Image (cartoon, helix red, strand yellow):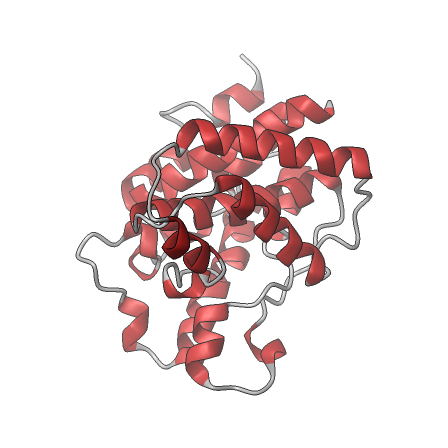
Length: 243
């Protein structure tokens, strides 16, 4: 049995921790893992390592799972009780926590750890930046390296897109998944998050086609079009856990 298969086994120690301590994050991570694996197959990449990265990119959330929206069942976000700056620090800490957990597991490939450490790059935690009224947006950015490989870039794209799609769907505000793909990719590129990787136009077309196809397959419910379009452009009003 390969190392890659072992760490993805349902009984593996990290999988158990993620599933039991942060079930919502586990569900999100499984979907990200499937999505990034599919992209990897299309682009001829190492799908085993991509699948591992997708599964454990948020393992750090298992330390304080109650602060992340996907793990809350009572409808109240514990972060809203904190000052915006404190909430921002709590949210962004999960990347460093993820890296620490994975580094201490000898079976996790080193490149996987690198990809996971870059999956938020220097993106802005939009909800708490807006809530704070701060004038310097850089004070509310993740303090991580931007993706430095195609694999890390794919992980970032899939994580942001899956989180956005899941939140919109749960709020019955996800309508045009194809437009959502365009919105998320445009936001990341305009924010220069993908500037450090080699992303050919052919890759970009493939990535968009695969993401649109996969999201159409999963999220096929139609809702009010006007409300959905407005919601997709204002994700911070729906999901404030990471973006």
